[in-house]
Image 1: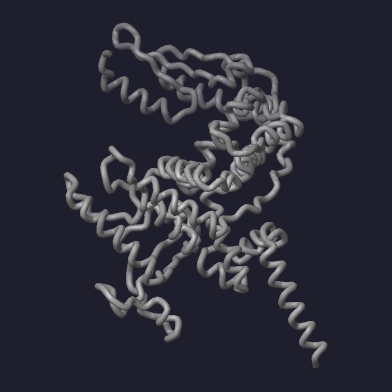
Image 2 (image 1 turned 60 degrees about the vertical axis):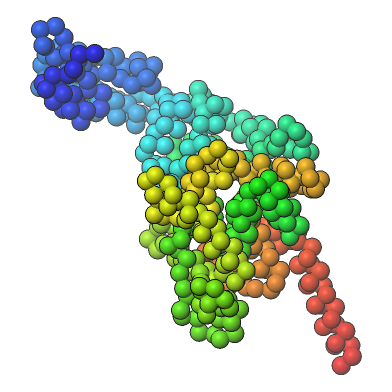
Length: 438
């Protein structure tokens, strides 16, 4: 391949500042300028324009053509908007939503909107957009009707008993994919944007489910996955934050005012004797907000001992690496044959999580666990604390939820939780008997 000349590089740099403008080398060192429509514009009837070697005419002509295209997208007359005769014939005005497919809109949505969101949001929405484009990519927004969404949602939520073929899409996954599609349609102002959502989830990890998972993780030789389960439920934090938990975030808590509270968490022996140690973090999902959520969560001595043991093992592997790694994570990839001590990639962690859950189902016969997902642990912690009688405001101090989000969770879980019903009626019955005796 011939190396571009300095003149060609400078010309390409100038062309890149104007949409559709390109420059191509020709014989004798000449540079030829063109305005070229994109795929959607070409399909609608816009034609390329050749300016030959006239750079000044190319710059002005491309700007002129882009003004016509912009007017056409708004549904106006292109030649009226440009103020004089067009350089080349322009198509008739057409509505913006009629000339781009869902795939083309999705690309604009990804590059113009999602880039301003958190990495986790970009990862999830980007994955959902690919699946959406597989189904609807070649359609125009005006082609999509409510029954298309209904049929797609039904296919996403197909559910059945656990089999060796693997799990089907959960309600949460269906909800997230549909939510991404609704956000895309709203962004392009589609008139059919308000479609119904899958019903809210009401699955939670009960104590026996958690115990089955921990046993399966240890049985398969993945003790750090067992620790991940314990930390996820105890702290109520998201996957992203747990996977980024490092040794530097384990710091003393020196400002606990209540002596009885301090006694619960004070370490009785070892290098942390007499201290209360806690996980200091800023929740990843909140880092892009004006007010990031900072947390400092104390560890009970038994759980702290497990975290310390994991850090000691991982630190030894890190220091023995070439070159040595100086930042040690609590949860690392334990896959046999993989370099030790490496932080998890989210997709690899999720794959290992599902592998362990499948093993737990096989060993215990608890087939309902197939419907449980990692994020249910965060909501399960909310339900557990609510069962113990704590207010939504107090629960939010652990999980970092907005109090209104805790309210929303309990609207889904509260009415179906028989433990709360039993506690309510038992307390009511007790008070009724006391009134009768009085």
